[in-house]
Length: 62
Image (cartoon, rainbow, N blue to C red; front, side, top):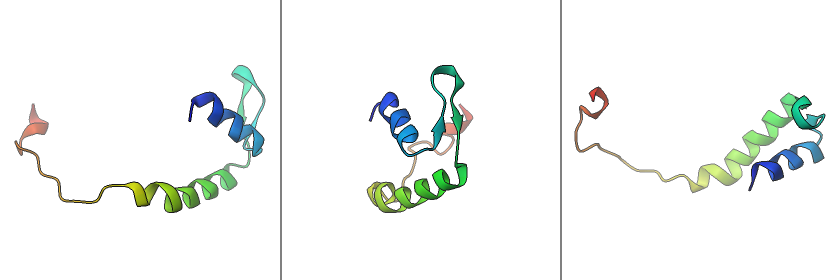
């Protein structure tokens, strides 16, 4: 999904007011609730679970 499509979707669902540089969030609590449901139903099942190990345990020091 492109950003413009996501913005249009938010506006269609009444989560976004205004246009151009004057956009404002609306119904933030409802948006968060919808995002949580979508995460649970769509995104989380797609996440790859497993044990990951870095070749170099000190990688983060470099």
